[in-house]
Image: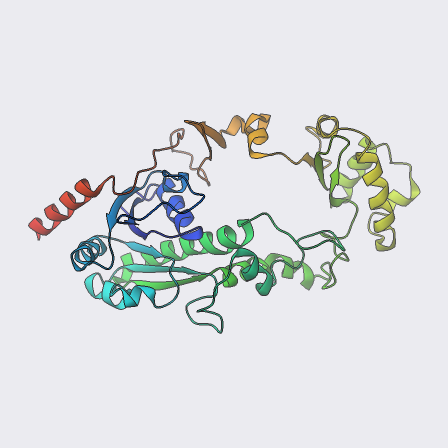
Length: 365
């Protein structure tokens, strides 16, 4: 879908590389500028799956000759991704003003936690800090529990990478009409707050309480995760009465007077305890089998490896390639072929090819 679009990615961590991978998955030519002679980030593999489908050139962005190569790459690109603290690219002499003088249609994508301009823009932070201050962490637990979300998914990926990718694509579409690029200021703080609008629309209807544990999504017994006899977990979220009725029937609770009062908040704590006892009486797979194929809105909590082995993976969502587990690109397009994970490059693997392409481009000009 993005065939013909070129993105230059300056090596970074987390949300920037993920956004670049997403664009590469969709067919963009993504060239990652890795640090020349740079060591692999501790804890990360030599060939990261976040680099799948990309090409790599190794440059020293403090070297004048390599800076000229970088500028030549910018001249060929539709978009650029960088994730440094504000001002770092400018100090290197390749900030948006310089790059857009070279290529006026360039969309310059900037990925930070706190934004380019804010009271905290020059301070350090991580995923959990951004979403806690933005309000996105508030409802992320059962009542009384410590708020906790899946690591990086709400902040780095949801509030960061996805908004950066959308911003880049919007900017590229506009540039193709106007010939003028833009600067995308993608802040995890902003994106994670923006995602709260769905919950705020529920609050607008009166069904989301500012007090944790008093709302339809974080308080009821029918919107919880329960521990099973074998130490596993199942999720329950049968909001609609017709789904709740099916849940009660399968749990053999249809005639219980208290459980009939689905929306009585005073009963929620007691009914949660009763369901916790019942779910704890059988292993996870017992409940998974009981509810499979029903509209009761109950599902087991699976690890990625278990998800790959589940019947739902008939879609090919999970793929193992050369011992590495990958999730396939999303969304899907009706006319695209089946997907297999493309290779991830080593640092500088494509230096010669990319430099040769730049030479050909200069020769044509």
